[in-house]
Length: 237
Image (cartoon, rainbow, N blue to C red; front, side, top):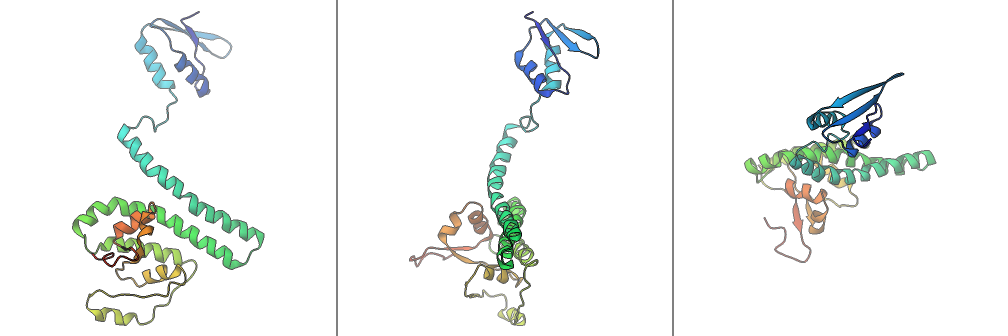
């Protein structure tokens, strides 16, 4: 019968979806199998079918969101989903070398970068969300951003190392004037250690770093200085 279709119980959502896709006319007869007997329900109008379709529709909650919200979630979720692969990979490598019996330095190294990666994701969300207010009221120093990177550096180092700062009492003597900190940069740890000073700090980095998605955007928002090698005018602000 052309105007007859079978409506299965809600426990089988896939079958219910097939019914929605098949469609019914204005006058439809629905067969609802029960326990031991069948029950017939007659649809008198297309609006009745529409209400039934809404009830058994298997659309996800994401598809029900407004178009703008869907685009915003995709714009944020896709990059962060891809970037989360990096700390997850470091975690997997740390576990692999741990089970393999590799030297503890290798395991600690992979664990360190996994930790800093996992911390970067939520803290960068806070940074991006607060950026309109910080840039509006504190364009020059951006102290709130400095607090975020201080938390990031401190929490990353805390499980692995505790830097000791010597001569901290000499820093206030500069009277709030700009100070240049020079490190040997033999490893990436000097970035994290300098953040332990607890003072507003901006790093000077080559311009290519600022082109890296998310990493470069965060550095630009915080106010770190990009430097183009060979260009004397570069880095002036």
